[in-house]
Amino acid sequence: MLYSKVKARLDEVLGCDVVLERPKNKDFGHFATPVAFVLAKAERKNPKILSEEIAEKLRAIELFSEVNTLNGYINLTLRQKVFLQALEDLLCNGFKPQEKNGEKILLEYVSANPTGPLHIGHARGAVYGDALYRIGNFLGYEIESEYYINDAGAQISMLGLSILLAGRESVLNQEVVYPEQYYRGDYIIELAKLASQKFGKEIFESEESIPMLSEFGKDLMLEEIKNNLASVGIKFDHFVSEKSLYSRWDSVLNRLQENGGIYEGEGKMWLRSSEYGDEKDRVVVRESGEPTYLAGDIIYHEDKFKRGYDHYINIWGADHHGYIARVKASIEFLGFDSKKLEILLSQMVKLLKNGSPYKMSKRAGNFILMQDVVEDIGSDALRFVFLSKKADTSLEFDVNDLSKEDSSNPIFYINYANARICTLIEKSQKTIEEIKSAKIEGLSAEEEGLVFLSSQLPQVLSSAFIERSPLKVCDYLKSLASALHTFYNAQKILGEPKEEQKLKILLGVSIALESALSLLGIQAKKKM
Image (cartoon, rainbow, N blue to C red; front, side, top):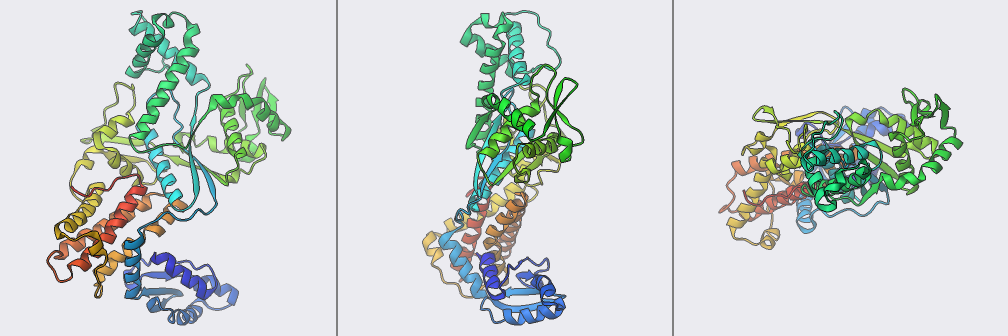
């Protein structure tokens, strides 16, 4: 596309890796480069003087109609034939996934405890991770997605005990007092009734049944979590069980000890995490000899790094911020490079309806179920609103805003742009092939702008992935939709002498809109 074509030509002519930017002021041209500042030091020249020398070289390149300088920057204006070729390329090839670049990445996200349904906070990390997964794979990274199942430890035992108590209350009709920390909500009663059907009422009579109920409840909750994720188009390449990894704990602990990462004190075993930036050392084995929650994370990351990926990305809830230093410390003490682990944080969501707090789920107790919101506003709206703000910043939105049919509702506004194009093409009664083969007789400034924006998607995707910010794709979609609506409102298209030319340009816009939405996991609408 345009960006890569221009950059490749500049790299060739100047013999270096040229940084190419979009000027904020469109009057300065289509692209700008600060390359003179980069080369000035090596060549011992004033950047302003050097920029003039470089500009003179670039004026001989067939791509540019104008090359100007401003305070050391070089501004580049493309020839119209470059836009025409970009449009032909877009209509002929679309946006195809890039060739694999050889970098293997393991992306872990969601990893919610299988002790209850997914809530709205889990959903944000899920959508964020899935968007990075889709965009990264499109760009040629070999990314695999993974869900770490926390199916060992106290929370799973608590699930089993909660089901036991719910069974005694709802099935055996006994009076039960629930301790404060136990799991509550209609879903626990549902699990108890299902357990009664499978095992019989006697399952609730003895606490010896807790391990069986824990496993039973965990399996059903994990299945529900998978179904919840599938409802918004999210599937994982791997599910890794914490329980299955615990057999390795002794060997992992030995390795930590051999590398000086563990010491004993107060009857406990401690990780020397303060040596790698943690505020204090952390307990990994309690006085009872039972490993802590951190031990499970250590085993899991040892398993990850032994699988030999080039890079590891974890998406955690913001409440896990304190775990970053201790996990990275354990990776170093295991003999791996913790710089290969990147941890992204996803902030919580505040949900409103008609300006008031969204109703908590009776089924789930004291939080908002992801599935309730999906049923309320749909998967596409949920995905877009979660991706339209940086994941590490708090998010508040009112679900009623997503039912508005105007420019204040971005997903409607974007879909309406694509639907307008599809409707025009349908009304024209011309085939796609006829539109693609139409001749172009000079582009207006507005038409150039649409072609230019349509062709920018690959660069937007690259920037979005490098900066871990799918927000950039959302902003791109809003800009392209806005440009389309402006063009549509200012032009008569059908029945005009240049009808086929305009439809050809709009078809390119549609390809860009649909491709970008697809990489966010959203199905573009062709009719509204």
